[in-house]
Image (cartoon, rainbow over all chains, first blue to last red; front, top):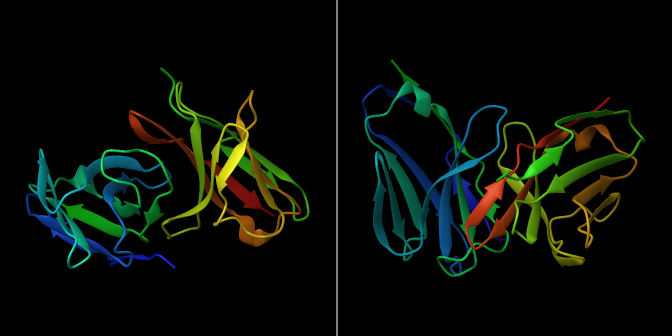
Amino acid sequence: QKEVEQNSGPLSVPEGAIASLNCTYSDRGSQSFFWYRQYSGKSPELIMSIYSNGDKEDGRFTAQLNKASQYVSLLIRDSQPSDSATYLCAVNDNAGGTSYGKLTFGQGTILTVHP
Amino acid sequence: NAGVMQNPRHLVRRRGQEARLRCSPMKGHSHVYWYRQLPEEGLKFMVYLQKENIIDESGMPKERFSAEFPKEGPSILRIQQVVRGDSAAYFCASSGRDGYTFGSGTRLTVV
């Protein structure tokens, strides 16, 4: 049974701080890793994807992947109240860059950014 | 270019009735996935379909649930004889070369 684990939180950070979200996965065959943001009552929206070990930056977001430790994280710099949402980590068996196949999701981490 | 279209957005069924959830993938996408999300939980994979074929149904409950993606028309997730435990948000996604996109979901309530 492939598993993806996240701390459900809630994680509370002050506005302007760095929010750090963590995720571990059990299947060493996982190839592609995704972070989704989900506002209450809405569908998930993709914010970051990462396929290789190391860091990937996109604006205020940085994804970090360590395949040896089976660990992926998301850093949000200069957190804003609008970042308050549930963040879902997801993994896929397919090689990076492809967009096919099922995603295995963690249970999500609730992030609250307070003014 | 419309995204993934799901309908209805909200569906209320009495215990024992049938629920039919529809999903039209993005234009150009031929791969469809169904996920279920219980309150306060992450998304759980149910089934992966291509046109007229079920690729992976490892997440589907053994009874009462079925899915299809016919040559013409939307993908259908069918739940027979619904029970209160089926109450959840059901999300459809489609994928193609340009990525993976989720629909807005159908919120099923069984009363």
